[in-house]
Amino acid sequence: MDMIHALLVQGAQMALVLALAPLLTGFVRVIKARLLRRRGPPLLQPYFDLLRLARKEVVLADNASWLFRAAPYLIFAATWVAAALVPTFATGLVFSWTADLIAITALLGFARFFLALAGMDVGTSFGGLGSSREVMIASLAEPALIMIVFTLALVAGSTQLSTVAEHMQSGSVGLRVSLGLALIGLTMVAIAENARIPIDNPATHLELTMVHEAMVLEYSGRHLAVIELAAALKLLLYVSLIACVFTPWGLAPAGAPFGMLMLGVAAYGVKLAVGGGLLALFETGIAKMRVFRVPDFLGAALMLGLLATLLLFVSRSL
Image 1 (cartoon, one colour):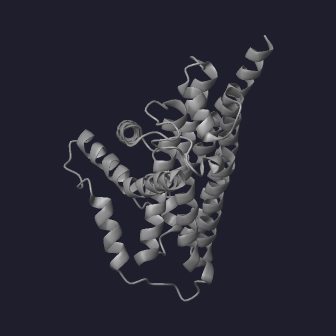
Image 2 (cartoon, rainbow, N blue to C red):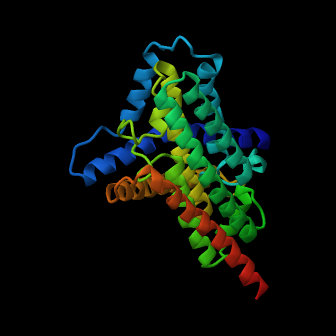
Image 3 (tube, rainbow, N blue to C red):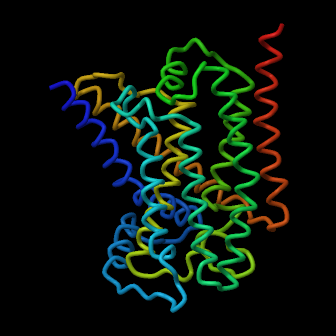
């Protein structure tokens, strides 16, 4: 009976992240529109867009290979698994032993690899341009993310997210400069990985500046719907990761009763709302940077992660 309950809770988390991902995207759009004094789209518009795309016929290029058809489903599967591994409202779930920061980084790299291949598969100039920029950003963002993972592992003694969250929740960590640097670096990596302003503008299709949209220009119908859902899941993943590691308050422990789980769900909803509001505020108050300045932006994130790790080594040696 306990195993059935644990499986139900794990399944609820998987369904929760899948259901809330388009809502987070819609919430960010609504807040940005309000800050710009516009009416903007409805809150549930991403759901309507996904349904509309799912009903449309798929149009494929004549030279599209099997990889072009399979890539959307591979990208979605890897992103969904990675998002479901991050503790959202409870820790110590059935599959929490697989919720490792390095494993999540590998899953995101797997999805990015197939997205870049799909962008180059048809052979269009925009697809190749977007794929080259995506790989360039990844080559700078992944080392920064790994350094942040090292920092968290040194603090918590593990790379398993449930262990990290429980250690942060215990109150024994206190205020650390290294954690503050890691938080800023992880936020910068999240902005770059999700192609948000100032790295990219997801609301436009400017040929000379777009990154993510350039790789999916040739997709249509249900294939585009699956890719857009995977992009929404990726944004939710990074917001959930920041909330799990740096604000773990409200997470229900393993084997918690139904009431505590509902409190965890409510706390998770508040964290998503705060994260989405801060993202909208940041994107509204800053302009998009030139592509040639992206390495400087991600280089700063890498240096923050490196400094956070070095500070931990220095503080332990004193």
